[in-house]
Length: 113
Image (cartoon, helix red, strand yellow):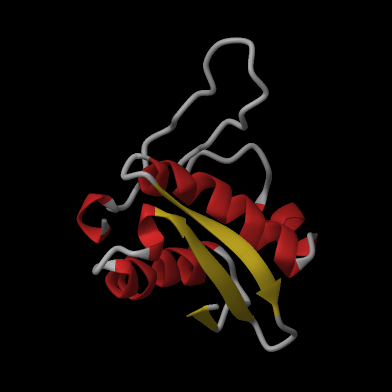
């Protein structure tokens, strides 16, 4: 699973008439960094995960935000194919954690639950 995750993610548009969110690469934001920093840390982590999810979904997996602690620790639950994937640790440590730490100031660590 980790082999497909690479930065930067390409923009993925929601298709059809469904209500799926639009996912954008980190450099394709409509908001200034100042307004992004004023949002609560949990909201910023969730927005970043929304941009990362398509890479996991492409392999039949997913990720759910469980908690964001005051010290910046992000707790994630891997879903779908990621639950039994032998590369889940690599996906977490080599793809999700670095991307979240880079994109969301204040994230100090990412742990699975």
